[in-house]
Each structure stands twice: as C-alpha cells, then as structure tokens.
Image (cartoon, rainbow, N blue to C red):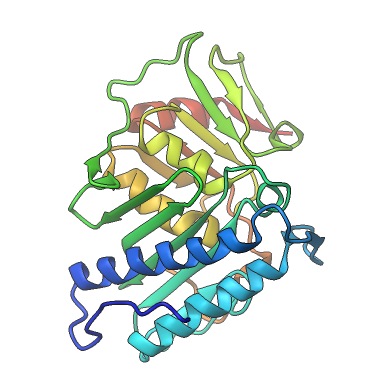
Length: 272
C-alpha cells in the first residue's frame, strides 16, 4: 500500500515543507529496505552505479512531490537530471546515495532531499535507514539528527587523532601540499561522508566529483551545523543554472568544520 504523507499541501511554509520532506525521506528509505543487499547494480554511461531500486525510489519521491507541490520543479538523479527554471521552488533528490554499498548489503547508504527557494537550499533531509538516522535542517533554524541538535567542532584543530573523509579516487585528482596529520576514511556514500563533518566526527571532507544531488541537502545541514562548505573551482552550485544538464556537471567540493580550516585546506590542495 502506498504510504500517505500527512501534509496539507495548501500551506507551503518552511515548517510544513520540512515535515513533508522528513516523512517522504523516511517512507522512501523504508521502501528501499525491501531490496537491501539483493538489488543488482549496473554501471550507467557516466560511470556511476544504479539499481532498479534507485529508479523506483526516484519515481516514488517525484510522484509524492508532484501530488503535494504541483507547481514546484524537481531535479533528480535518475528521472529528472535537467533543470529548466519555471520560477517556482525546486526539489533536489538523490533517491539512493551509496548504491554500491546498498547492493552489497553494507549499511552506509541513504536518501537525500532538499528544497531550493530563490536559488538556495531552505530545507534539507538526509535519511540513513539502517542506522536509523534522520538528519534535517531548515534555513536559520540549525541542524538536527533525529531530535538532537548537531554541531561541527569549533575551534577545529587537525591532529593525528582527527578524521577526514573523501570519496574513492580522491588521490587521483588532488595532492595536499605538506601533508596532513588526520586519518583518512572512505565510506562509499557521499552524503554520509559530508554528514560526518556536520555532526563533528570528521574535521573535513574532500570530494572531487560530486553532483548537485550529492550536495544540496548536505550543503545546508553543514552550514546550519556551523561548518563551511564550498566548491574549489569557483563554480558555486547555487543559485541553480537554468537549462542545465546536471548529470554531467561535477562540482569539486571541500567541507570543513570551520571557515578558517576551509581557507587553509583549500590553499593546500593541489590539483594533479
């Protein structure tokens, strides 16, 4: 039976939009559990991984948004990767981040939903079903994991006990001048790697090739947690670009626990 989301679509306040997004991410994540560890992975033309569950979950999320917010636009990884500005708010969806983990029965994967107004994220939700972690933020209201407020570490000092995250293959793109003392961790889910910065477990995260749906929700959650996130090639993802095919747009990104750390690390990262 199709889950019913308890939202009155006639009142599109930030609070009601966030409640809708939280319920939707949770419903999508619960549906994904049905094929966890059994869904067959394939490689798309762009080299990323996809399963039937990605497609089905994208369809489910898009259908729910269209039913509740029919005037809004949608930008999603599998179904609607091209953006055409219609003047309304935009929902950015990654129905399943960490697809390889998901297909192989590893627990680090999740759903990402963000809503963009006037070009910038105003609400964001990340849901990691196996971990039972629902992370959310709204502009100016802070960031939360379930009901607990989260914060990036401030002041943030890198030492030999610190952790940073990065996607696989990062060393093919970047070299950090002078080296770093922190320990590297790679988890196979971009949104999880970014989220660890927001909750204070990782001091920074280096991502050479994320797409807009990898970043949109985590971007706001990191900012609302007190962290700093930005692209490293002067190609900011927000505001969205009209008539843009986002499937091919890579946005090299650095997220850190503080603005000072972002400046220091960005200056130390060299493109190979």
